Image 1 (cartoon, protein in one colour):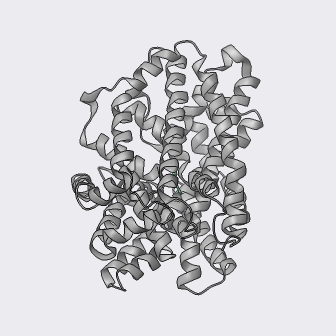
Image 2 (spheres, helix red, strand yellow; image 1 turned 90 degrees about the horizontal axis):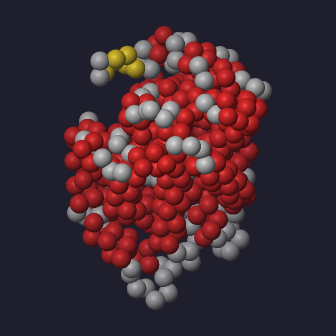
Length: 462
Ligand code: PHE
């Protein structure tokens, strides 16, 4: 048991791997930009409320479901519902979701790698122009970067749970924390940075609308890797003796901490560089704009620090974001791999090969949806605009489906698995079996307001 390579070797190994999954583009880019757009402190408060009141109990539910059944998400749904058709379908959604997220997330990861390399060869000034971004994402170089990204994912996943995922996370996560703190400290020394801090920590409550509520909730789910089957899968790799509740708390704290520090880096940077700005108008939700926005921040440092130093700082940022993205991508691809291995009775390598091939094809399609291939760029029409395949995947699988998957988990636990089984699983490693506030809160809230809030937000925003 102790040396099972299909399990994490220790609690800290698990926490780092789960943090590797959770800390990603969502924390470094998504959270600060969403906070800037949605009233700074108001978004922050809402986000923290959702993390504690809704996401933390769901992290526990997913982890305990995974550990108790020792199954992939489909297997877990099947087992606790005793093969009930509707629930098996719901379990299948927990596999489709990570697959689709992998398809668009790998494209973002590819862009980050590309940006890192371009900054290294001295092209920061060009990256700051939106035209360049358009040219870059439609260039054939994208496919070279995609091949490199897929190659790295294969290397990590081929190693399996302990020698692949855990080892990579143990190396990369501390590196990421150091780079992030270094950058945040640097930004805080810039003039006018305090104006950004003020904006960040002052809740403008009048800016809270339904779409801000939905934005904060989806962002919290995405950031914590919830509703994607990842935590069920990782739960199944957890040893019985590891304290699940503590691990969940550490995971939520790490992920939220990184998002907060990323905000601490980005918002003061915006204010330092554009002193007369109104951050609510600064950024658009369009992914493309976000990508040319960051190089602009670094370009604005050039008069003070010179081109070489600014490029070095920019390269550090893109490397950081790339590392965060790769560890997330690994975790999300692990879900269908584990499922195919168990459900399709394949070897790990065969399952990995099939899933990687499918994700690569999907990623190529979404990478080609920026004007190069017409039917992919005009994939759908809604909200008064033509949407590319990439946009559709983001809208459906980032903005909408995750809280819905969370709702399904609540219903599965309450109706099929039964809450006392969940609570028993949470307490397995707790020698004196006394339940703390979080266990008691989870036991209660998962049957009452959590599903209610999730259902309400889902219905109002769909
Ligand atoms: N939690 C990741 C982030 O914040 C999102 C993610 C996780 C995406 C796992 C893909 C896979 O960016």
